[in-house]
Image 1: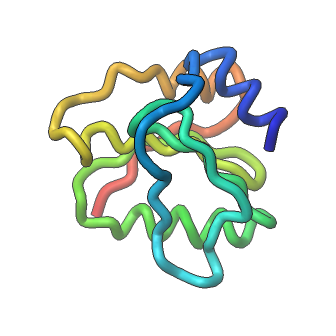
Image 2 (image 1 turned 180 degrees about the vertical axis):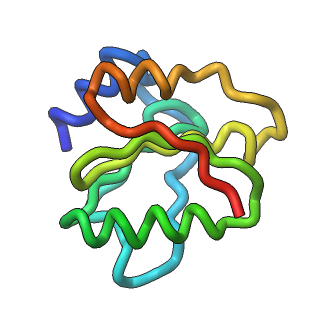
Length: 110
């Protein structure tokens, strides 16, 4: 997890102590093994394997909270909940992060 946080921090400039707690979609099969806030509404989630990540992606897709931009690769994802939390568009460059980390960027919504 430390390497992942460091890589995300290099691109996004994570806060040292962001306010709040990560959000966890509720499904026992898709619970992250670790979560860290990078910015107040941007979280990094680590999963035990690709199958758990896929289940979590499906849960985020069904969120019914509006569009949720995210980046995922292997067994991790970075989720930007700025729009859901504030109603305002996010200025976080997840597309650039995806490019730098050879990962996939998408916006999921129900």
